[in-house]
Picture 1: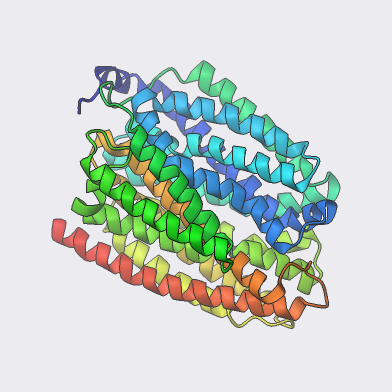
Picture 2: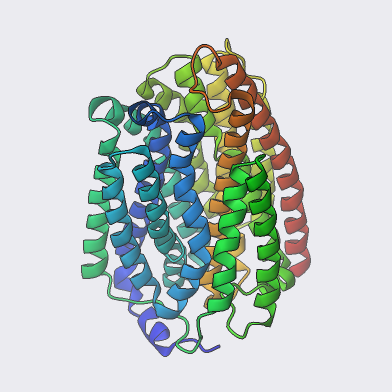
Length: 471
């Protein structure tokens, strides 16, 4: 594999583009999660307009995550070959178009399909944005720039509950999508006109069509099937997905130009353990806001704005701690930070397993604060570990892989929540009649998340020992 001379030549030109590059990637990282989290707050309004039950509403979120997870790895590889800036630019164009479709959706089905398209655009952006930034900055600043980009995500999540609640109440839920479409247009204009450098690692690789054609339907079957358990069709799809992923791994080991270099997992233990930790952490935390948003609005009868003010606690602490932990991970072993963050998250999740109908809002805010602190302490150092464990030519695929772990974890988190709601509430709409059943399902969800996070602590400690041994 050969590093492109064009990439090396452009590396010297990146100085004038660094500020703008950080600006567009951080803006993208701010608004995309902002809209995604804001949609969670707006789900009761969306469900009311389109007569959707709780499981249908969960698919407004899961549709986006499904296609993001399925497309991230192939698009990360294409970005390495074609050019990361190009992939990021066209990803914003595609994302903006899909977002506009969401804004004008005439039905719940149309909205879910549009969210599927949104996920593809998101995969085009997130498979390359972190790789672009890391390629433009020296290794000594890696933790800092990762921390800033990760904190942009959390600031977006912080603003989402409040802005989402205000916009949903004052302008309607469609305004969330209209605003994001405008932001995507601005990012496209700035990227196209001001960022001239390109980051492309190889001109000689061939695209792995066989691996891609096995990977994408297998991931789709696995994630969709898991989200629909325990029906017979869901069991069949889940098993088929697992078998397909096993086949994909075997094919990739023999491929000359694999879409996902499996040796990174089997020969680079730090890379493998860090990605596993990322998957577990997001699987154990992402659906918390979804479940609590429904709890606060249906059990506590809060308005979307009031629910948003409660939910804002977690992402605010995420954002503040992520900046600190990212900078700190340049100076000390990031595994200590990641392991500690995961352990703190266990405490926050355990507190949420104890919620009842009468639980005070101050109790929920405290639990969310602990969870946010732990998550912020984990995320930036863990991403730094992933990106620092591979050579430069693998930045694109490493960025796409950790994004896949994150998005797949989010999808599994939503699937666990959806499965629990389906088991305890069924296909009925949530109301005062079945609210106790919903609260019971929520406690089960938080219990599963707590167990997952405990497993994640052990995974992080394994990575820490490997890091120490490699040094």
